[in-house]
Image (cartoon, rainbow over all chains, first blue to last red; front, side, top):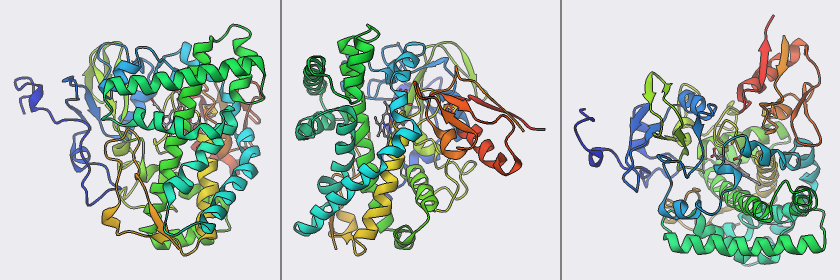
Amino acid sequence: MTDTMSGPEALPAFPMTRDAKCPFDPPPQLMAAEPMSRVRIWNGDTPWLITDYATQRAVLADQRFSADTTRPGYPVQSEAVLARRRTSRPFIVLDDPEHDRQRKMLTRNFMIKRVEAMRPRVQELVDGLIDAMLAGPKPADLVTEFALPVPSLVICELLGVPYADHDFFQACSKKLVARSTPADEALRAGEDLRVYLLDLVAAKEKAPTDDMIGRLVADQMASGELSREDVASMASLMLIAGHETTANMIALGTLALLEHPEQLAEIRDADDPGLIANAVEELLRYLNIVHSGRRRVATEDIEVGGRLIRAGEGVILANDAGNRDESAFPEPDRLDIHRQARHHIAFGYGVHQCLGQPLARMELQVVYSTLYRRIPTLELAIPFDDVQFKHDMVVYGVHSLPVTW
Amino acid sequence: MKVVIDQDKCVGAGQCVLLAPEVFDQRDEDGVVVLLQENPPAELHDAVRQAAQVCPALAIELAES
Ligand code: HEM
Ligand code: SF4
C-alpha cells in the first residue's frame, strides 16, 4: 500500500466497531490490523495504532511517551475530552514528576493491606444488596440494583462523598464517558461535578472527616502541597474511575459467565479464594472494558518495534487487542478461568497503571464469589440478542441486564 | 536469586505484594515497595519472577545465580 501517497481519508477509522454477533470480542478489523499501523481519528489526526502486547508494554513503560492530552499530536478521545481537559487536569493526564508527586499522595489508601482490611465491609454491602434484590420484584436489572451500587457505595465511603448524591454524580460521569456527548454538555457535566466537589472540600475544611478527601484536606491542602482545585480534581478522577469501571466488570462479567455456565458453576462452588482471584484476572483480560485504547504522544523521535515514531506523533495502544495477543495468551479468544492471565494489561501498564487496582480486584473477588452462590439459579430474563452493549462508551459494558432467578 | 528493588521507580500498584507477600511489602506512608528478603528461597522464585514480570514500573530486578 502506498500510504505516503494516499491521504488520511484512506486510513481506517478508529475506534473500530465490534461484530454484533461477538459482543465480548474486540472489533475484527482491530484484530486483523498489523502490529503497527496508522489510523484516522474523529478530528482527522492519524496516530499510530499498536496492537501487539509486547510493543504496547514497551511504549507504556517508556516515559518519553507523554500522557498529556494538551500536547500537540496527542490523540484525544473526543471533542468533549479535548474541551474538558483544558480546564480539568487530574494526574492521569500529567507526566512525571508532577504525576508521581500527586499519585504518591494517594497510594497508601490503596495498599494491599489497607484494601484487605476493607474486605469484610465490602462483603457486608454486597450481601445487603443481594438481600434487597431477592426481596424485590423479578426480573430485576442487575446494573441498577447491584453492579452500580456496589462500587459506588465503596468509593463513596472511601472518599467521604455522601452516597445519597449518587444519582447526581452517576449522571455526570455517564455523560463524561459517552463518546457521543457534545462538548458543551460534557463541559457542563464536568463543571457541575467540580463545583459539587469544591463544596464538599469546603465542608471538610470546616468539619474535618477521616476519609480520603478529608485527609487530603487536613494534610496536603493544609500544608500547601495541593490547592483546593487539585483536591477536587483528584476526587473527581477517583469518583468516576472508581465506579464506572468496576460496575461494568460486574455486569458484563456476569453476562460472560452466564454464557459459560460450566465456568460459572466452578466459581459458584469454589472454596478456593485462589481460583476466584484467578477468574477475576481472566475476566479482566478477556473483557478489557476500558476499550478505547491507552493513548500517548511521543516527545522525541523514538524507535519502536523497528519503526520510527517521530516527536509529536500520537500513539494508541489497543490493550483490548494486546490482551488477545496469542504470543502472550495462548488461545486468547477462549475464556478460561484457570489460565495464567496475571500479566494482562486491562489496568494499563507503566506509571499510569490503575491506582485503584487492588480495590477493584477485591470488590470483584467478593462479588463473583458471592452473587452466584447466593443466587444459584440466576439467569438472563431477556434473549441474549436483546442485550444492549455500550458500544459508544469509553468504558464497555451493558446498559442494563435484566435477570431473574 | 538476588532481588533488587528501585523505590524511586515504584508506583505503588501493589502487584508484587499480591504475588509474593513473603518477599515484598509496602511502606505505610506512601505504598512504595519494601523488600522483606533479598535472597528468597527456591520455592518463592516463581512468584518473584512473576512479580518482576508484571511490575508496571520495572522496579524489580532479579539477578539469577
Ligand atoms: C475493574 C475496574 C477498573 C479498570 C478496568 C480500570 C482501568 C484503568 C486503566 C486502564 C487505567 C490506565 C490509564 C492510562 O494508562 O492512561 C486506570 C487508571 C486509573 N484508575 Fe482504574 N480501573 C478500574 C478501577 C478503578 C478503581 C476502583 C479506582 C479507584 C479509585 C481507579 C482509579 C484509577 C486512577 C486514579 C487512575 C489513574 C492512575 C494514574 O494516572 O497514575 N480505577 N484504570
Ligand atoms: S509491583 Fe512494582 S510498582 Fe507495584 S508496588 Fe511492587 S514494585 Fe512497586
